[in-house]
Amino acid sequence: MTKEPIPNAARAKKIKLFLMDVDGVLTDGKMYYIPGKGKEMVEFKAFHSLDGIGLRLLNQFNIITGVITGRESPGTEERAKSLGMGYAYQGFLSKLEPLRQILADTGLKPENVAYMGDDWTDIPVLKKAGLACAPANAQAEVKAAAHLVTAKEGGMGAVREVCDFILRSQGHWETVMGYVETAHWPEIKKDPMKVVRESNGRGK
Image (cartoon, rainbow, N blue to C red; front, top):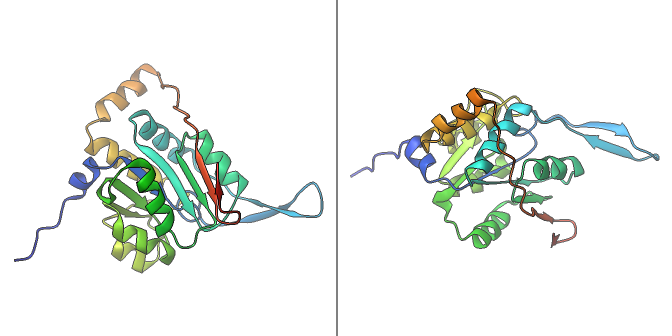
C-alpha cells in the first residue's frame, strides 16, 4: 500500500532548524567584484531585506537558522551574524558533513530541519531534510527533490516565503501580526555563531 504524502504544513510544524544555501537562495546568484584597498578584487553580493525580517522572526521563536555554502565570503558571515544565525559553514560544496555536524551539535533529527537550495550540490541535503525547499529559480532537479517550491526567486524574498510558511504552520502568525500592529519588534537573540570554513578546517 502506498503511503499518503505528508502535507507540507505538517512537515513545517516539526521544524526547529532552518538551514540554507547562500548564492541563488539568499542572493540572486550574481557575484560582483570591486577593487579593494590594494590591487586585490573583493567579492560583493546583495541580500534582500524581506528575508532578513523573516529570519529575525524565526530567531524570536527559537528556530535556529544557518547557512551552508560552497563559497567563503566575509559578507555572508556578517549577514548571518547580524540576523542571529547559529551556524555559518562556508566553502563546503559537499554539504552532508556540515549537516551531520549541526545535527550532532543541536541534538535534532533530520525531520526537524528545513533546508533551502537551488543547485545540484544541495540535493543530498534536501533529500535528508524534513522540509525541503527550493526557490523559483532552482534547477529542475532541485525542484523535483523539494517538498516546497516558492513563487519568488532567490535573493528576491524566497527565503521569506519559507519563513512565513513555517511561522503560520506553527501557529505564530497572530503573535507576528501583533508585532506589526504595535510596531514592537523584539530584539534579536545573538548567541555566539559557530563559523566553520573549509579552507582552514576550524570553527569559532
